[in-house]
Length: 214
Image (cartoon, rainbow, N blue to C red; front, side, top):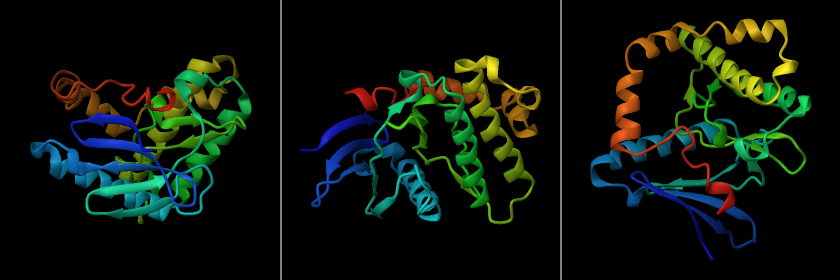
């Protein structure tokens, strides 16, 4: 029986059981509000493209299908970071390795500041979900390097929250040096973005935080 995980202005996210008995997640943009339907389809398409390029990478959802405004991906068992509260140094070592593997395939996640996008698997390992804002940059140019730096910095912010005593001197320097992209964003578009997402769209920084414990 399908189970609703999330319903918002961009459509629905359902947990469904495939014919073989495996669990899958279906993002359906056909239920999006008409004035956001184009954006919902665009973001879903970006997620599908990123997952396609990351195929075979452990602890990243496998893309099952993408058509007609829906994206179906593998379900990864795990609890979101804000519930699991990881405090094992191994988790953060493996998380950094996972982020580096994304970058090696020319993908930046671009939304790692959100704790619900980080899972802690039953084995205590990190997994990543929600690739709607991911960017593929085959030339790995200046913008890619800046966003990749911020991917790492956002991971280190989580480490600072849950395991502050294990930050290295180098990690503290990374935390202290946001990219030019981030500094520009803070000075220009962030206030508008915050107003639109929180006041108009009723989002929060932990959007989707309840998905894993409904």
